[in-house]
Image (cartoon, rainbow, N blue to C red; front, side, top):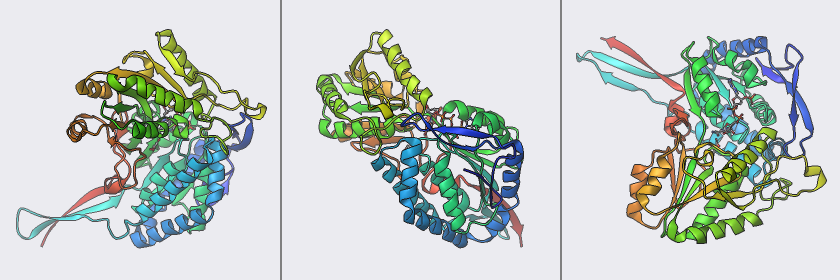
Length: 475
Ligand SMILES: NC(=O)C1=CN([C@@H]2O[C@H](COP(=O)(O)OP(=O)(O)OC[C@H]3O[C@@H](n4cnc5c(N)ncnc54)[C@H](OP(=O)(O)O)[C@@H]3O)[C@@H](O)[C@H]2O)C=CC1
Ligand SMILES: O=C(O)[C@H](O)CO
């Protein structure tokens, strides 16, 4: 693997590399460059020196490159799917779904050609006007996570490039391969040199330097709240605009009149897709006391039947790394220590010898833990969930809103009035009523509280990459 800086592939200037381990086998896959501060300077300088020319091409020319990259990804999609299965451990159908998401987002953003508008506002006098232009920020740093390592790259670089910004992409050190593949497709599509750059390396080592770089004007990051807060701190030195999509703790609310088969189907997706490693994953389960026992039985049986193992065959793959796997045992052990009852799962599945070292964990449901417990308050980010009974709709909403995060939420009820009451009352960026996610490209993916700030997707998401400039004229 190489860095991509100013139109050329290169190694780190120190020659140092980082090892990538397979989440499926725990064995080494490859080494990739550990960029130095000099490499970061070169990448940011290349982006800084290229964005104005890129902007001057106009939105139609820019969109043609994004369309071309989309076509190339579509033609070579099997390669990207294979990368996702291997480096993320994603099961094949979900890898296919993620590549569909990459293609959909590139299509969606390229369609903004000739649709970026400003305003003309009247001045105090008839011969005065205010021209409000939408202009690019300049250098955008895109910092992406490992859970949807290709879709998150597309969701950041497409709007950034479409609006005339240039990009320095720093992918997760758990999944650099999918970022490299996408950069190769944009290169083949004819992206001018310097407009898109790829820098790999540990965020803990080069992250602060990238964020605080004086030529960086916007940072778009998806990842943990902890890292998002650090980025906020470091970005204050150059006042970079921030788009931060951070932690989630989605409540999954099942009312007494819910269609339990629909709720079951969506639960199995919301809890176990991507092995539960999704910002919109169900992280807390609130079920009306009248249907609690029945629904627990349904989801426990379905969870036990979920095959875990080889991403080419199983219904659920591994967690991303050893630390994530250890986290699952930590949350389950703490819940049991608080008197929680594990009604299914709670350990590593028995797997064949080549998978024994993989980061696999059983689908796990725990009852009998409190609303204040870590299981209900912290982002678990894996196939583990706590379930609690509720006796009133107000209690269910109150518990749902009792979270430091506020990204996605789910509600199952046939009562139109209650559904609208929840739509008004929930303090989450998204509420899915009687349906699964994920968020759509034309939806605005945003959250309350520690979930972050600004957002991605929809016409509001593309506007986040544009600065409004006001020109006063008198004639
Ligand atoms: N909202 C979401 O979709 C996601 C939420 N998460 C949450 O984050 C937790 C930890 O996951 P993890 O991957 O470690 O998330 P991180 O927030 O640590 O990593 C996300 C990205 O930020 C980079 N990064 C790390 N430190 C810095 C820094 N100081 N400055 C700039 N960039 C930095 C990482 O690089 P590097 O990989 O080199 O460290 C990676 O590219 C998960 O368990 C989950 O709770 C994680 C992923 C997605
Ligand atoms: O970041 C994520 O996990 C995605 O937005 C979920 O769809």
